[in-house]
Figure (tube, rainbow, N blue to C red):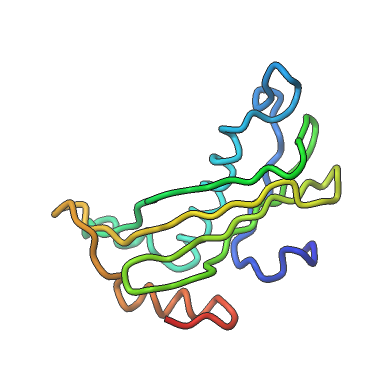
Length: 144
């Protein structure tokens, strides 16, 4: 694994598709949010968050930001890392990076705020204890 991604528990390998590009022949900005999503879902699987969906409890994306550092073009393969950089009772901040195998650099960085949500009652709730414990278990130097 690329050394830059060693602190990211979830890393998704995503091939750039021809259809991801726009008229300017680089990956269109909306695709980066989808790449972040793929890695975020992999992270949720690692912490067993998706197992709570049957109870009506799950994550919801409150906000997301993306900083473009270098354009990505077809063909390429991207490594998309996701980790938790800050944790509190009812939200955490995901940090994302995208590494281009072709360019050998980080091309994109981002952050997402994830809130624990009760979909049956349509309201924010504290994270279940098992989710907090699972996050702390896979992250280095992270405390509530």
